[in-house]
Length: 235
Image 1 (cartoon, rainbow, N blue to C red):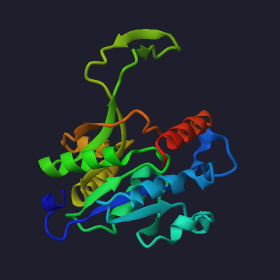
Image 2 (cartoon, rainbow, N blue to C red):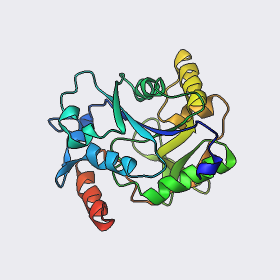
Image 3 (tube, helix red, strand yellow):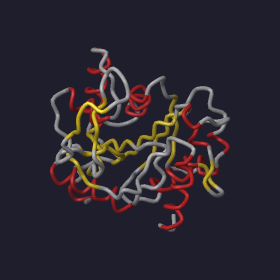
């Protein structure tokens, strides 16, 4: 992998962690809820810190955050923080300010602690081999229903043949991602992940299949699922 990196290029992880996670109905942002002895964010950062191809990690935190500095992992020399924004895109942009335009920005959700090193490596290998940005994702296996706009009834079934559920990390050249996020913001386009900004600007990110245990913790019941996956994979 390293021989495909151009001279001076780095792979830098950006973790947007400025959200409040209201759907968790907790007394603190969801990234600071615990699984075992560590917070969700600590588990996630540990995965990134210990990956051999990631040079450093930039964590975008809320300006009112008074918890991050208390985490033991926050003292790791690979980690630095920036003040995030009101949206995911704003937080990622804040992190991108610390990168060179030719660096590779590996953006990963703070609430995806179960990502596997082998999946991160597969993404990096494919993106660098093809010199084209890409994301981890899983093929949709459930039958997908399109709801009626009037009420919660089925309008139709959707062909799932070409459907994928996006995950993270998502890996793009820092300069390209920054320009795409800025263009989308200028036009008032809603950006739900980094790939959607690239798509808006005409790009076609790679899809790299990952394991289904790379879940995003969103609701209270997800904590038990993540705890099981973490224990099963010895992380």
